[in-house]
Image (tube, rainbow, N blue to C red):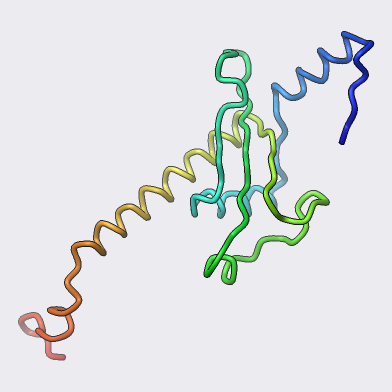
Length: 134
C-alpha cells in the first residue's frame, strides 16, 4: 500500500487532488470492466457526492460467477492483482460512460425478462401459427 507522509500538508493536498481527479483505465481494462458493467457485476458511485468539485467515481468490481465466468474472458491479472474484488477510482468521463453501459445492460436484461415472463412456450411448440407448420 502506498504511504503518504503526514508531516507535509502540501503533499497531502496534492495526493487528495490526485484522488479527486481519478485515473483512466487503459483500453483493454476499460473494455473488460464495461463487459462486467453490462452484466451488472460492478458497483459504481460518485467518489464524494458532497463535494461539487469532485467528479471522480468509485468503482468496485465483482468477480464473474457461473456461466458468465465460463464464457467471458477476463484477464487473470488486472493491474498486478489477481482478479477478485477490486476497487478503482475513475475519472469523470470513464465513470459516466460505465454508468451508461451499466444502465443499458440493466434495461436490456429487464426487457428480456419481461418478454420471457409473458412467453407461452407450450402454444409455440404445439400450435403452429397460421401459414406455418411444425
